[in-house]
Structure formats: C-alpha cells, structure tokens
Length: 626
Image (tube, rainbow, N blue to C red; front, side, top):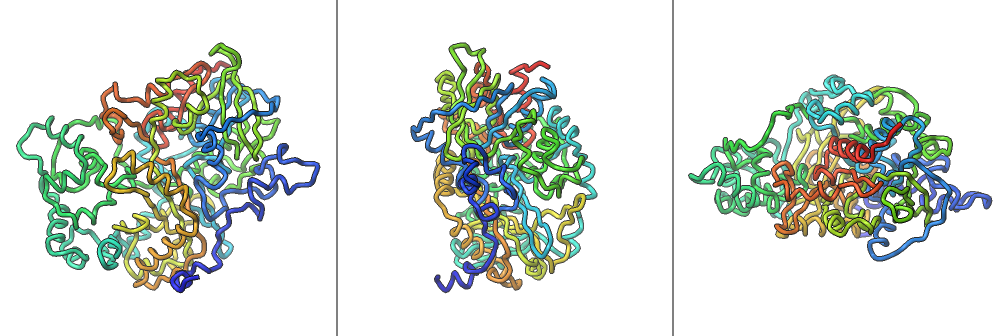
C-alpha cells in the first residue's frame, strides 16, 4: 500500500461489508442444507437478511444489474413455470411500483393477489435506507431520495396517499431542529480544490461577501467577475422583448449566457460549474439558462419573464425529511401492504422499526414482494391483448415464470422495449429514448464532528472536487430516533457526486457518467472520499484514518428521470415548458393491452410525488374492479 493510502486510512478497519451476515446474497441459498436448493428459496428468506445495514457499494449494487445488461446485449431466457398466478404483477419495487400495488389493491379489494418484482436486494428503488451501528447507537442515513419537497403543494393523489400512510407534515416543524447548527455557529462554505485552482481553500460564508472573496484562489479579474455575478444586480439580455428573452434563455446553456452575454471569465465559471449538480444533476455547460434563471441562480437580476404558473406552488422550508429520506415512504407502503412485515402503526415508530424480510414473500400473503428478481420478459399469453400475461424473471441464476392478469411496468422506461418487444415500434423508440442521469450519494460515518465546529462549517459546495457537496446530516429526531446533537458524538457526512464530462451534450454526459459508475470500484470511491474530507476539514483537526468509522457509497447509474427529444438533442429539464408534441414521455407511457407503464420517466420528473401520481394513472388505465 502506498504511503498516501496509509495516511488516508485505506488500511483502517472500517465497516465495508458487501455481504449479509457473512454470506453473499447471490450464493446464500447454496449454503443451506442439501434439502433446500437455491431455486427453492431466495436470499431475502434467509435468517439475518437485512440489507439496510449493509455498507460498502450500495444503490445499484453488484448483482442488481448484470442480468438486465445481459438482456440488453442479446441474451434470452427460458423460464421454468412456478405455477403462481396473480391479479397484478408489478415490475419495479420503488415508490412508484409500491404505490401501484397500493392503488390496485384499493380498487380491486383486499383479496387481490399482487406480486412485486425488484432486481435490487431491498425495496424502495432510489429511496434507499442506510443504517450504521457505532458504540451501541443506531445512525440512519439516506442513500437516495432525500425529502418531500413542499408536500403541501403535492398533487391530489400524492397528497392523499401521504395522508393515508399516516404522514403528518406538520410534525416536521417540531422534529427538525432549526437551531442546532446555527447555535454552534455553523454556516455554508465553498471548497476550492487544488486540482482546478492550484491550492486547497475553504471559504466559509457567501462568495458574495467581499471579505470572503478576498481569500479565494482566483486572480483579481476572477474575483471581480465572481463579485459581479453574486451581486446579481442585472441581467445581460439587452433591449429585447420578454418573448425573445425566454426563447434565447431556453436555447442557450447557462455557461454560454454568463460567458458571452455577461462577460464572466473562465475562472469564475469554474468556481460555479457545479452549482446545478444537486438539483439538476448537470453542470452549467448543459443546463438551459432559462432553467438557471428559474432556479434563482445569479446573473439575471430581477428579470421577470412571467412564463410559469405558480398558482399551485407552496413555498415551504426543506425540513420534510425522515432520517432515511423518502425510504420511509417506501417502508410505510410495504407495511400497509404486508402488515406482518414490520411492527408499529404510525410515522414515528416506522423510523426505527426493523423489517422482517422473510415476511415479504409469504405464500399466504395477498401481496408479495420478491427481491433479487430481475424481470426479463413480459408477454401476453396467446394473440389477444386482453389476455393474461406471462412474466419471466431471473433470480439466483435461474429463470422462472409467473402469470398475471395485468402488469404495471414501474421501472426504467429504456428497459421496457427489451421486456416487451411486441409494443409498437414507435412507442418502443420513445421508451428507449428516456434518460436517467447518474449520481452518487455517499454516507461517511465519522466518529465526531468537532472539525466542522472548529471550522464553523455546516455544508460546503466543492468546486472541482470528486464530490461536489459535503454536508452534515439533517437534524431530525422522530419517535425513538434522536439526531446527533453533541459534536463529540458520531454523525453522518452526506456527499454527492455527479459524474459528468463537461463539454458534451447533457445526454452524452449522462451516458459517460453511467459508464464511469459501473466500472469504478469501491476502493476508488473510498480513496477519493477520504482524500477530499482530509483536505477540506484538515485545518479543523479532521483525520480520515482516525475519524471515518464506516462508508456507504450509493451509486445510481440510472438516477433522475428526464424526457429527451432526439430531433433537437434537448433534455426536458422543465417538462411543463415543453410543447405538447415534444412530451414524448406521455406517448411512451401509454397502455399496451394489459400492460400499463408507471415510474417517474412517465412524467419526466424524478420527484416522489410524480412517482405516486404516475402509479395511480397506470392503475387507473387498467381499471381493476373489486
């Protein structure tokens, strides 16, 4: 091991488990007594199976995507009939798939037989729960969808479902500790990485503050540009009509607008390149300037184009966060569908409830969730589109088939044409064009957060770094769970990486990032995480070799869902502003026989409320009756 790796603690005994109680998910069943074959039992039925507690490489973990990639590359599968028959089979166990099961049961009655298939080792899709244990204490983090954004403004169906699941959004005003970090003098900052700026520098405070800007590693001209940009006193569109302004901004990327129209130099542009990474998962070079304006990014002054209908928008604080993010929504759905799977009955006891994964796929349960099961074929039996369907899936290396009266596809839309080649070619083409942007959510469990307090830092946007952001976890306490409040106690540092390649179109950057994530080993993520935290927090006393207790990397090669128009090579970052004839995601998600199509791709909107609404639409198209 290199000296630098030892210095970073790459040889430290942190928690890096990629296995469940010592046995790999894929081979677990083969370790059972000879009377039980791998084909007879799934890993989720094994004693001790509890994926939320896994660390290491999570998200799209090893074993979750290989079968789908083989299908993409031309593999075919012949399944062995299980003899199982269901009223509904759902492909995809994320929030949309679980919501579809909920709405179908609501419409068809409590005796409806429903099977949910998911390729991951846990339910919830991108709503991923990460658990850690240290010094006898449970620490919960989010590995995907982080919060409910303005839930008071949710569309009707999503708002109803949240209410029926028992989520009282008013409770978060008490659960979220608004004063914890400010009482310790912590604020936001920007970390300038030496790989781009020549030296490491942590600036605590706003870059709009001349005193803060004074110390950043930019030339005098770069500092002047950044000061002018953050002063945000005007726009740079000249004397043209509002319609012309809106059109120009829609067809010009934010970087080009700032460089050519505003005269901002490359140094300042590098300092803000990652500004849209968290919300839009793209850099300033591929984000439409109109989207940047709508996001209140600097450079537009008080420009008012009056092109958005804000009548349904509710301005609420970003506090509607369970300790595991929206994984709690998924957990509440599963408990509602399979009550024996977890104890409790409200939004507070669900936070620390330990699920019994062995209950998810019991034959006596009307609703069953089968994990580690990748669907590879969905077809109508016989020639009629009104006929039942045969669904083939692969689990533990064996292909199996079940039948379903109806199917909801609640998965990545680009996979649907591979599963259902009978869908008309024009619709298959639109489904295949759906994009999902790659991203990484990393949780580093640190033994204390004194370094943050010593620096006065709450969160940092990191310019030029491996992860674009590092922040202390949300200060939320619910039920029996109390968030860390003592800086001498362990806490999670949440970090985000957007694996992009500036200079290419958004679509090409997404594809390049996906390839990177699927080939990058955990060791590379760990080394870069340790190195970045050491350099950013070192002056506060942080030592990665000593202070990092565990690390979970949630990689999502297929993250945020976006519509795409091949003719213009444009990504639908703002679907509500697209012409109707370009909203291909709507045409792509039309029902085909007894197959309906849900998931966030159907809305070009990665938010949880969109997942719920699209699930309801998909089930309504099938018209199940009690």
